[in-house]
Length: 406
Image (tube, rainbow, N blue to C red; front, side, top):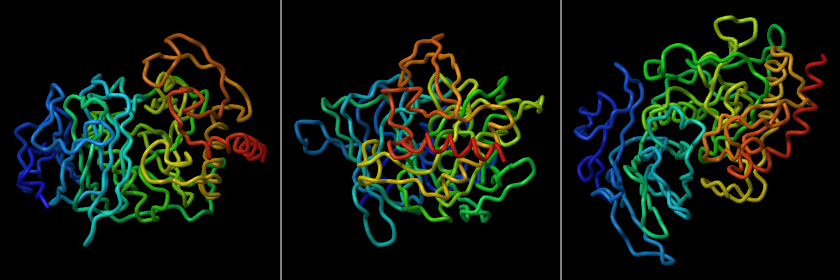
């Protein structure tokens, strides 16, 4: 078993890395803050030209494809794994990534790790990156293999190991939605999940209004997380996107966990409304080409059958919980009510282009449901929010309409 700190060139992104014995000589120019409650460490796997680094070894090829391995790396505590690479560097079609994690006294099973770029954030992000991946709990070791059909790897490919170090506070929801004034459901704040505001862009990123809600799933690694793990998963996404991909803030406006907890993601999303002159609406980074005039609601988990988007084996029937759906409906009823939007209606949205998963060129106008999904807007480019969540959208629209009539 190789020790991570001694055998690899690592890229420590925090001031505390010197205390860990990690070299920061090759640190990339990604944003950092003056004080951090999180810890993030990067292992460089390829050079700026895509050549494998000392931290990535060629191993016996499988099925004719070139296979590379990090070997077993230990000596670092983390709960989220991130993969990022040079912006605009292509990922060879058919490239697959697998990882296994060490916890306690043993190694877990191999898991598929998505390598698809999160292109919705790419307009602002300094690097390309895959969805953040929750390891299933605090881990102290990782082994990663990459298989590329012709051995071509992304340029400046890095493995990010994130330990959010979340403090005590509210955990996942309890299933019962508590409604306040004007039907507002209880929404846990960014402070509740431990956001370090010093690493995010200052201020609010505002836009004129909201015309639609876009439903997502996070594909963060597992569907059986515990209430106490929810904050760690959300914070891991936040730290990975900012410190490994160079993005400015949380991409989704809201996150809903499987216990019914609703969490503010993007700063200012809870307070946005037409009557708020300072924050009429908050621009997120959740749907390529269609972030303007929409807000993103992400359900924490993977609802695509049979693991087709990577991560855990979701099996043939991964279902969002009733508590999760109920909270999502109350959140939508409240927000759509503020913007006077019809939950069963249609809306015209204008594409900002951008390529990637978005097939609609800049300026093209599309007509979609007011409650739509990532896959409905970027059709053909993503399975998000998963077949078994997407199939629930007609009922969600009807339920939200009934709630708004009360």
